[in-house]
Image (cartoon, rainbow, N blue to C red):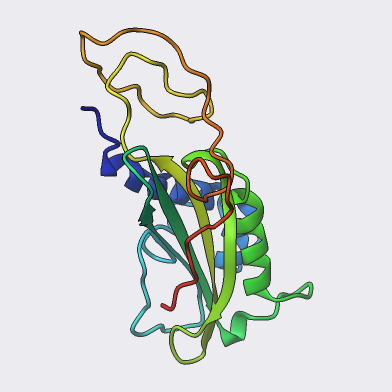
Length: 208
């Protein structure tokens, strides 16, 4: 049977890193430099991390983004619920932007604009679930954004086409004895229980 491999699920993080390093607003807000290179590949593992990370010591005030993914609910053999967490935090000296506003608020808004409603993660659209405050270390404040979607738990062992709203996903080899045919795209709707049309996201905020 062809399963939805976890390496595909964790590939969400590769896509997120690429998106963040190629977004001019994210790069300029994180580096605090309006002339920083975009795309900026100096940021991965220095100020943008694909896992939950809190620096033990920081020589000077900086801004950080961390992100990770969980599977918080498996509905059945067909669907599960991925959750994407994005932590943004900055030193108190970086809170206020030169043109007004708060750096954390602006970063959260830019990331939400890029991700909320995206069809590049899972089936259907990625949905914003919550935005909460947190304090990672002394003199730093942050926000954590939580997004939910729905994805295949396993793919059917047949030659049926993968629904067209799945982006950049491979078609797995199938059983040679299976019948061929096509299927209409799946419309998962909200991240609620499949088939009931509900909107219970099932995810919650995190407490880093």
